[in-house]
Amino acid sequence: MNAGIFLLGLAYVLSQFFRAFLAVLSEILERDVGATPDDLAFASGLWFLTFAACQIPIGAALDSIGPRRTAGWLLLVGGGGGAAVFALATSPLHISIAMALIGVGCAPVLMASYYIFARVYPPSQFAVLASMMVGLGSMGNLVAAYPMAFAAETLGWRSSLWGLAGLSAAVAFGTLTLVGDPAKTEGEQKGSLAELMRIRALWFIFPLMGVTYAISGAVRGLWIGPYLADVFGASTGAIGQASLLMGIAMVAGALAYGPMDRFVPSRKWMIAGGSAITLAAGTLLILLPSHGVILSVTLFCVIGFFGMTYPVVMAHGRSFLPPHLIGRGVTMLNLFSIGGVGVAQFISGRVYRASMPAETAAAPYVAVFVLFTALLAIGFAIYLFSRDQAD
Image (cartoon, rainbow, N blue to C red; front, top):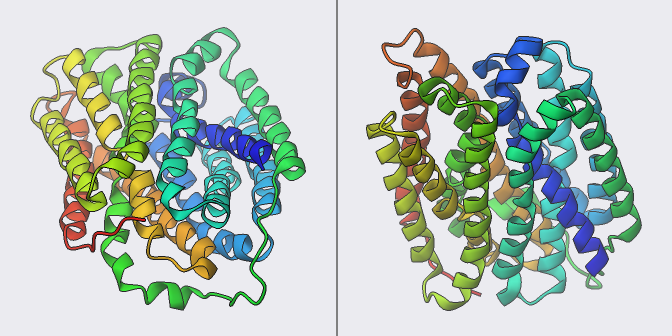
């Protein structure tokens, strides 16, 4: 099981990489295939939406056939195949198709590990294990920053994508070989989506789950690149370094929230506090969009650290799930999270385009930051009415 969890962790590193690497390729892809920032926002949104759309069938598959085949085969076909399509891309449409396929391939890997955590380990350990997996996976964020920019400049982005296609296939085969399916309790009842939605406590968690990752995921995944290039004239290497710093902050945040869940008396108010700080940083970014590159990157890092409430919000929702609904429950929570990023990313591209032509270089990005911050404020307000519960 330990070897299997390690393979799922590597698969999740790839998942985090693929949702974030477009930011450092924005200038190169615009030059080589004519992909503008709103084209890349559309492609990035497709990754998140296809990822989200797969969550309901993946939840049913986890509860029926288990995590090994669910994660292994989808990663092989979607992750490996999608990266190959990207390597062959000659237009923005090809990039969108590739990102949609990669989204399908990445969709089951984190939920497969969460399913194992929830079925095999004590409930009190779920938040720590969940945050450790997110922290490990967020290393993909780091590789998608400066290392990806360096590889694109030295090896070429097409060669880099071919290498990623091969790596995805290798991890998929390892998953099919080494991941173990948890045993089920004899006579365990079958769950349904309708039964899941009757758990009223989840209704106040779903909205925050839908927006808590949107601002950090979408900004790190795409907007940090065009923003720094257009507003401050940053090079591909400088964008890679800034993305790396934000990625490190996201890793640190994910790793910090899990242990804090064991020691902070209130899970709800810990999440609310982190969300409030994220809102404050987003507001400052709106008010001071071109004050200086150091301030902007610092605010991105604050958003990255305190905005990584995902694993503990997941643990909060998990605490209300009976055993026979774990697969469907964690994937439904993930559907809201990833689907929220996808919808916000689609809208952000339209907001950016609607703001052009602009009086200043920062104005279109201010509109994008207003969108993400407003969505987080709405989810935060609803979450304040949730019921606090720890394991």
